[in-house]
Length: 83
Image (cartoon, rainbow, N blue to C red; front, side, top):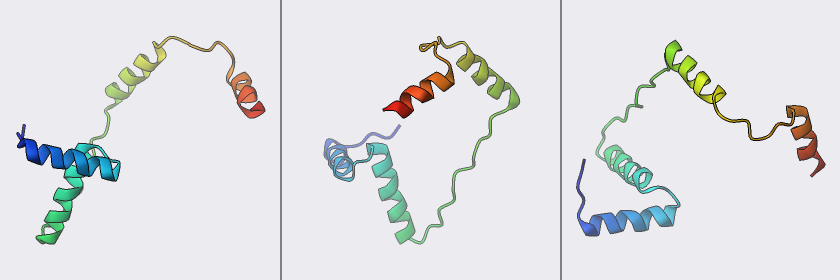
């Protein structure tokens, strides 16, 4: 974990609010801009793919969620289209 001075943190929060971004996204964007200016080649982070087991676990987790609306999908769409 990186510890920032109060002044640095306050500046990051102000800049994030002005850009309507999270503080983390603001700091990352600033660092990327500085890196490009210094001639550092930015490489995208490697994408991590889900394994079959992870996909099945996610599906099981979603399937276990309670049903909040007992109407059929067609009924829900009809109501949405009526608005």
